[in-house]
Length: 207
Image (cartoon, rainbow, N blue to C red; front, side, top):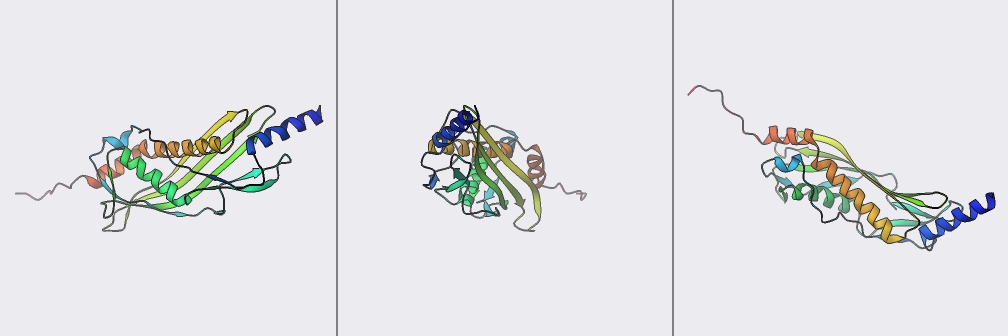
């Protein structure tokens, strides 16, 4: 029975990983679906193009291929740099809610990429594919250089299948990016901070 279980798990890993010794390159990007949320209720704001620093400890890969013994055998990487992928996702969150993104924006968007990782959990008959994206985003007044609002955002997505190769892995990571976009669009505290920042102050001076 133990031998059978081992063989089943080993076979599942092989099905999930394809050639375990060849590097996999994923073309990860958000989907085209737009997300409605509180951020879209604000009057249009011009944001500067997001600038995020990759602060991950392991920048060489976003995951590992493994053999039947669970040993790391080859890198899983992305076609574009991770910072470019996440910056585009943050920009998409703003663009999808009818704001503008470009040079000279009224609000700077800076921060760090804290995690961008693909993993899998092999069970008896299925494999669970897991995508995890985390970043810290600071919305900054370009004139005063003071933070308007700063928060951590995350996108997590998992899918359980009998197996799957690079197409499945790419879909999982792309949907994790979609979840990251959703967490920004639905952030009511961000909306409140931006609304307060963009509302003109009324003078109390008597006329």
